[in-house]
Image (cartoon, rainbow, N blue to C red; front, top):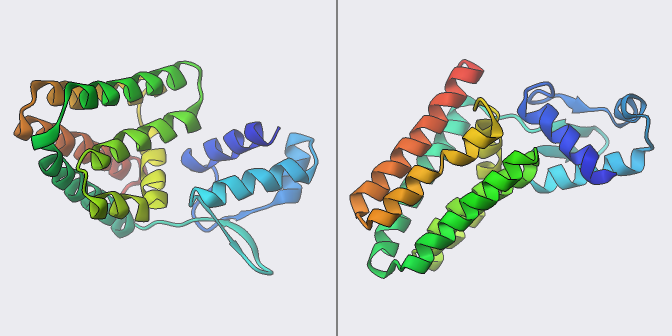
Length: 208
């Protein structure tokens, strides 16, 4: 039950029905869903762990707010980090590494086809995290981990801006194909386009 409630709340968040700074009312949700508060509390806890909600003692739980500047900073840092990771990884890239990325996109497509939106986002993050891991640079990997929650937010917002979840998953194939060419600059250009397009979609959707 808590997984279903988590998915329900998640969709309210990324669709903008629950807005930044808005208080999450447990009692109202319990009445709307006709369930007890326990699965709602568990769902809220999971979304807090993902950085989507923030709890404040004696005040309640609120939707995390992000300004245009916040989102732009996240995307700028992501792009710089993943470009650096590719340059670090390139001398050591193997076919197995590349097909590992392809396998993750396959998992994204599977999640998309069955409407598992949160699973899609998690595999999306795993894809970009794997690019950083291929750098074999501990500082690069740590830097990605340090902004995991922020990346979760940005990717969650982007996935909802595509015509379908399947399109959101398929948007990663050009990156895989660029890796398959084993052309360093082609890989970097594919990442620049992917991340730049994601930022553009969010700006258009939220009137930034």
